[in-house]
Length: 457
Ligand code: ADP
Ligand code: MG
Image (tube, rainbow, N blue to C red; front, top):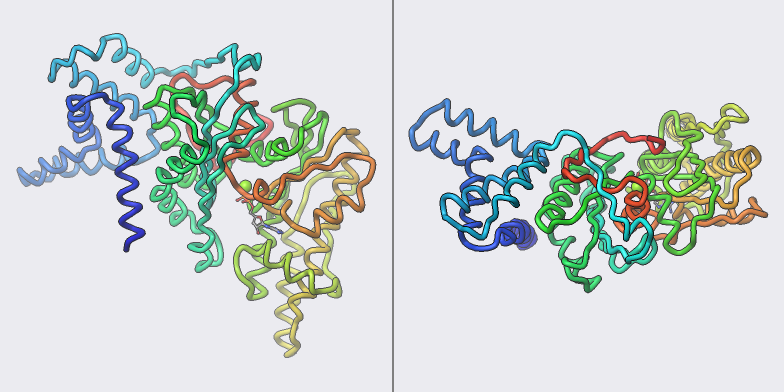
């Protein structure tokens, strides 16, 4: 109950921050009036006052529209509030020019790009606030220049989803809403920076759970807009790869193996932000296979760290399949392996035999890692590179880390440390620096979320 109260209070505190940016009480009242009209709440209340079904209906429809993924309505809302502030409350401090600018921002069709030379050329330090909410971690970070991490607050929902044995998208979105303003606050406080000093706001635009992504996108957009900061959308997979740039330096050309709960990809990069995806998984992602196999074995969630630990006490004695697919192709498939584990458990249960979970975990893990290492060895024969980067949640796996260093010599292999392997906003901030250098920021703040998103686009 106390927790719910705190979340509620924090939510309103966040709204209050935006409201405060309107300047004075006239601004606040104007924003409230416009919000009541635009959100439909006012019409809805009038519907009740006059007991008019039509008004109630319109109110509800507008409410649903407003709550939907219509981020561009934020500038429109604020612009209208400025009109009310000036002409109803006769507040001459609000200039025509600023109102016009906000309006234009809301309606701009073509995506105008802004690039500030000082940052592109690296003349000035760039302080970046980044937001990540693509799955079940609510995270905000402050980073500097695609390298330095000043703060990286990660609020994991693992405990909440454990009950269900996996991430429940709707539950994830709701918890992002409850926590996001608190995480913003904490990241800014811990980095000990002023909001004025932030040069860029970045947010994961995809791929990920769409409802979860939209919470971060809306929060980042509102923050950027209220404080007049440029905004960039960052690809989550690029974030995973760039996590390796924090403690090491990416050297091109490189091969990146991204292995996480939602993705398994081999990517070739010949320069910053230039991606060529060589292969992906045809079915399950590696992390997903870990999670599902763990559930079949009656172990908990998330499966990766649990099986990693069990495997340390076990031996590779169950003969599980390795799906190498075509020898020279860089696609992956893990559903066959998953089914094999399922069959093994089913048949032993029927025969009344018991399975040693330590041994099964070890067997599963060796099968997975055999395939990953085989693909890496094949790919570096075709693409001579300076570096191999292994990133994403599964890169936290102790056995994978051990084996790649043992089995692949003569080429530098870098992996982010454990805290930067699983989802976090620091990696998004690092990738944002290079994304801005390449693409600039969107002037109109119209950033959408994408449940699927290719790195190569
Ligand atoms: P996504 O971005 O796709 O949500 P993350 O990068 O957050 O995924 O990684 C989460 C995944 O990483 C989970 O599937 C989890 O089981 C897996 N994982 C975490 N630690 C380990 C580990 N030590 N060994 C293997 N897998 C792991
Ligand atoms: Mg991830």
